[in-house]
Image 1: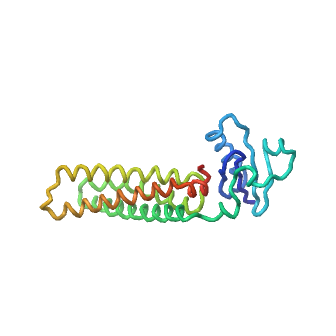
Image 2: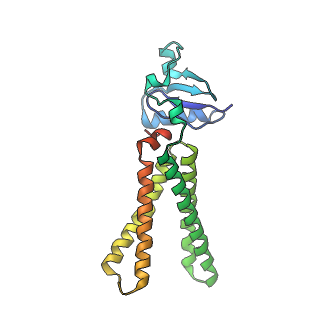
Image 3: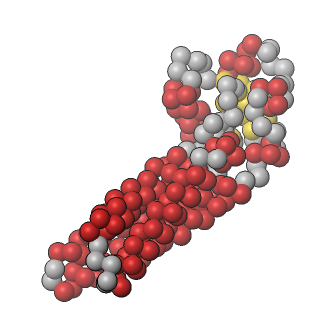
Amino acid sequence: MAERYWCAECGFKTPWLDGTEGPARQIEHYARKHPGTAPGGQVETRGRRRTTGRRARRRAGRHVPLHDKGVPDMNEVSTRPGSATGAGVMGIAFGLAAVCGAVYVLLLLRDGNGFGLFGLPVLAFGAGILRAGAGVLAGVAYAGDRLSQLALVPASLSGIAMGAMAASADWNDDAAFGQLGGFGATFLLSVIVITLCGRPATKRYLGEG
């Protein structure tokens, strides 16, 4: 039976999980965010909740609404905010573009040059950001953190490239403007993804607050 575990100290919640994976995620969260505190909170089983752990013993089994513990209302947190939707969709689009670009670069191996090998790390990056974007849409815990960390890579590389081009590019070459526009668009999209992942609504939805 699928269950979701809620933290007693903050708004963190695990995804819907079966078996022992849910308690393991809860323990991992407490170790990272609340070291030295015994895990506790509530367990939600598809429509009903029960208090567990330290809070359960202290409150003698009395049901405590999530609002009283500072956890958002179920109707509020179960609805994906627009910032999370935007971050997830852009992450998926970013990942698909990277994967397609990597496949194209790998095809250059047929010409006998080594440049095509550059497609391997790009392919791995594209798969990673694609998975993170899908995780944000699915409400997977910490998917937003992973997506924003991955988006830092193209943001940094495109920023460096734009700086180098501005310092040494031959502006009489029309190709330079096209390259600069591509780097600028990549930088802007990366910053938007990072910003959306950092929004409070996104962090509450993904239990990263």
